Image (tube, rainbow over all chains, first blue to last red; front, side, top):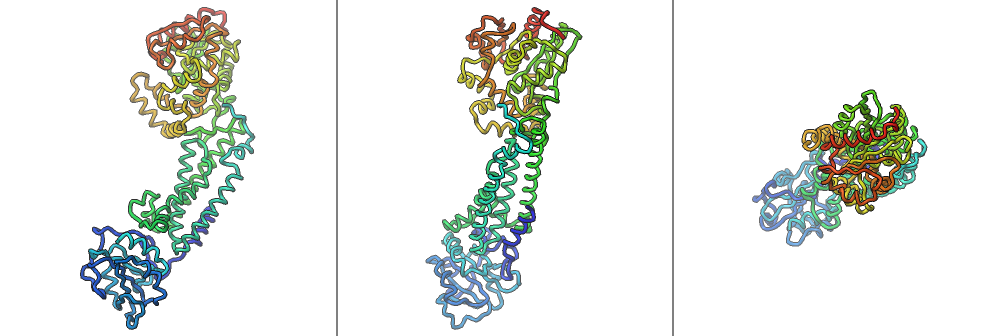
Length: 160
Length: 445
């Protein structure tokens, strides 16, 4: 029985990928951090200066996703919440996303927001939620964030 | 209450929660449900969460099954289904998240540590070890329990289902091979008096009376009834017939051919059953605080007055067996506490208040409710009988006992409540000695 159980669990659980969080429990945790434990980023510079004016979703990716890829995620952003997509490769010119985009070649933005570092040590792929008082209430790696719009909807919904 | 003893090979199969067909059906349900849950989580790329909560649910189910076995003295029905049930409970916040858009929060740790479970070192591997250890522990306890019950069946007894404490892992001794624990105060003379204690008691309640009888040259035989006191590990069924059989074996082994029998409370019912079953072995009865009731309802009302546990047992509450199972597990410390806090009774009598098994207690109360031989005996005794009653006894009020036809019995009313065996030992010893000496020709050793 022990062998069967071990085999089932080992075979059933997906091996973490290079973009995943080394601390599995921290990835897609699904709960907002309290303000007194959250990082404050009042001076965070993003296109359109949305921080401090209202809640913001900041998506971090290694390169800009296509408009089609991001469509579901964009649709899940609650009204009244700003969305900024940050590309680590810095190639943001000519974006067709119709949302604010920013380059973060050196990773300064990700560090300021407190995005976790993936297993491969490269730039993070995931997103952060910043509340209207400039506190980072949620910052998670999520290589499949484009397919997990329902999670954004739930967590961001609690923020608004 | 007697259960026909099934064969060794067949009893486990006959016992419902262990039937292979039932277990197989449960296993199919568990596997199907877990596959569905796994696919759901995998669809969200969250198989890691499925594994964690499944393993937490499995560990919790194993530990709950251990607790159930320990408290109820029997495996739970649907024991495998608990895995799915507890897994669903553990993952309830995920259902709320995806179904009702409720984000996770710290309070959700009430769902078997739903949040914190992800933060243990080594994650799902740690939970795998925990689940394996707890499942292995349950498998070990269950196999020891089955082994003990199988040995009982081999010895010709009904398997001891419901027995707690030590009896979970060790088989009970067959009454045919193990003599009841007893004290024999033997001045080397006849007559012999057999003293039978009441419910939740032991032979120690008779110590003061026994010493006085011995001083008068009367031999005293005071056993712990089947399932009580030091006889706790003897027998698996505890109906009046079982008590009678065990007592007759004790009389045979101690060469007591004919005895005067004195009983206190439930011991009176056993005394009457013994005298009815083997009148040639009994020369007379002295019944101290006999539980005689007009009808079953009155019996329930009166027995409910004994204590909280009796009330639960009489009302058929499942809490009774759980409370008793807990007491079995904590017998040693509870006995120590009872001994230290005893005020109205001697410390050893107080300690003996928990030296019995749940089935012994339950079956004794059932005997008083269902086949109490006392009203018939008092109405038409087959042997000379003396009844001693406390005038302030709320459980067996003298007035109600005397409402029963009792022309052929001698009634003595003394000052006291149901524990007159401890407080009026001089008067009771007098009554027993008078009855023993009134027909000395009846006694042979």
